[in-house]
Image (tube, rainbow, N blue to C red; front, side, top):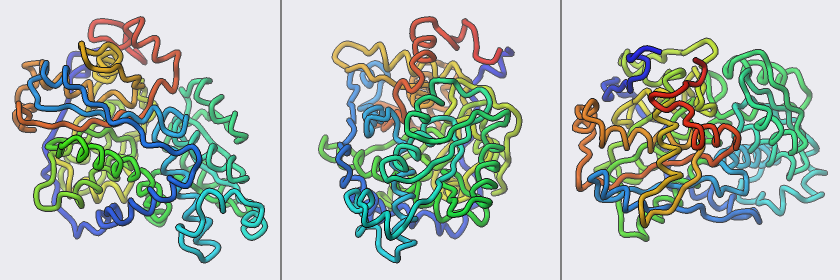
Length: 412
């Protein structure tokens, strides 16, 4: 693999702005609706916001925080927040009610099943989103069909199958699986597409999913306040961009006059947002092909149109990272400095940490460090979006050095 392919690529945001109509959907008011819904689940608890002060001191920063989503609902990833909320919004809409009228106890009741009947929720996934949708559908007595792209591990498929979903691994990439699931949903009686990406004509449900992710942003905001902190920087990863759009949309609303510097991070094999930002004319650039990367949850080549509108207006920079950045982040989290707790972060969860460490320690990226204004006054919020959702791959990275800068590389 060439040196160029192993380098981090980045660009500041020079994309022309729009009327910014989508950011209002990520307001505190909307996120609080989602949070209230999630709190009705018996499985709900606030996930940790872990302060890594030893690391902050080592990197020359004021504070480093990580929102650790490995604890979310016992599913090891944040995605269930979006799928469960979208299903609730859809059911409440069909019944002519507000989502506040259909908490968990109502959604799982026999009375609601009599009123609503049974739907089949279709989705495509690299793992975590499909597992979240299947988990929610299973608990609400609904059906679920999940299609996964080629390269998906059996472990990820098995997690979803255990939620009583019909699940297949297709000889297709992620975006082609999305189209397959959408086609089948349209051809199925009471078939509903629950997807965390959006395209023209399909934006309402993805917006609900992003609002569901807002529960995490709302929690992090409150936890930061409780620790006497206000983030100067937010590093968040992106596949189709739904998580990034939710987080950046929330904090753009929260700090309208003086927002944090917010950085969107992608896998180099699927960096559609970065490429779109480089083009800088407002159009979206798709990535096609197999998109081989250890960051399975980020292997998406077509951006969510709702999120793209938010990101082009509010993201400070877009960064494309090779796999070693993520793998290094996983190892840093798992082998902390004295006084810092360990964080179990999977391949798609750890790339913000890998990027922050590289930017602060590698002179090759001094220009990026200066452009992002990272210094001893910076208080940085990172999102670890998943734990070891594929334990075998996690061990390959941590134990065997998979995707180290001088070791074997995924897909090589």
